[in-house]
Image (tube, rainbow, N blue to C red; front, side, top):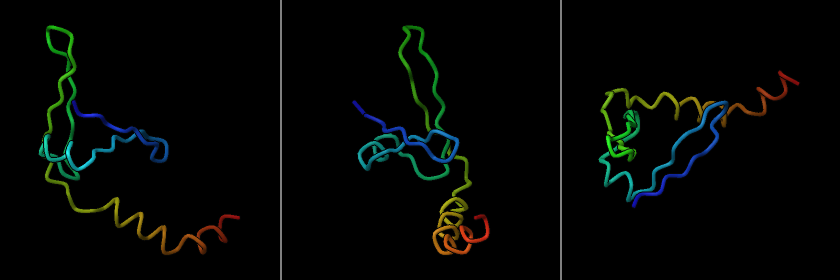
Length: 76
């Protein structure tokens, strides 16, 4: 069984995969997870490669970490 952790990311809810879950699902950053119900009512997950693993979110987070004090002083 794979257990997924949900985490608040801004106004969205993100799914956190540990190393075992990523390996089992062959998932990487930028992939899409498609959830569907089977005829028996079970939930099935499918990983779809989107090809958008360009690191935009991580670069944005790095920018915010680097300039947090400047941004905070401008907004307050």
